[in-house]
Image 1 (cartoon, rainbow, N blue to C red):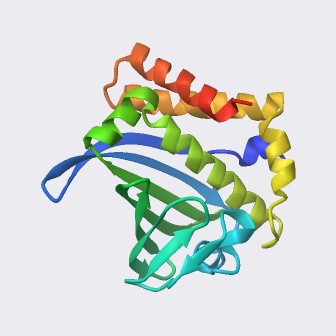
Image 2 (image 1 turned 90 degrees about the vertical axis):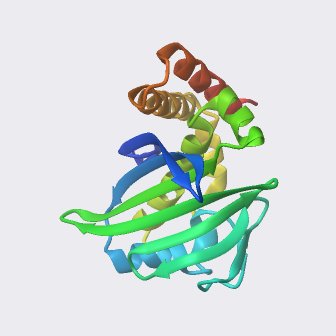
Length: 211
């Protein structure tokens, strides 16, 4: 498997939105996987498959149920319409944000589009001022890598030690650098000052490649 090819999104976008009368920020990413909607949906929602490419998960994995990812976010499943739409709250370190996933069939597989919508509150804005969209975006880039490895292996478990070694290699560091840079370009396209966006990307790269 070529990790460099499997890493990241094919489309990235940064935008603003309003939720409940309050402004939010949205990072949007998508890529196509070489499988059908049913299989990709199962990889995203089957409690036995999720830990093979993402994180161990517990909870009531039904609409209205609460989930918890080991060592990471938890939240509520607010929409689950197989095999097309999954919405959850993303609750981490006291901040509530929202993740929406959509699947659609394409000629060469299934297009996955993910949106992560974040509040513009004081704590979130401090993090954004430091890293911009890259901190969230590169995190999802890495998740897209894991999902791709899982799909390409026929549903097997990702070799996490191999992925960690790759991330620490020159090739892995370049991918993270390029991913952060791609999020900076999307940020600039959304109206951010190029100097500020690139500075955020540099700090994101440093955070993800620190040893």
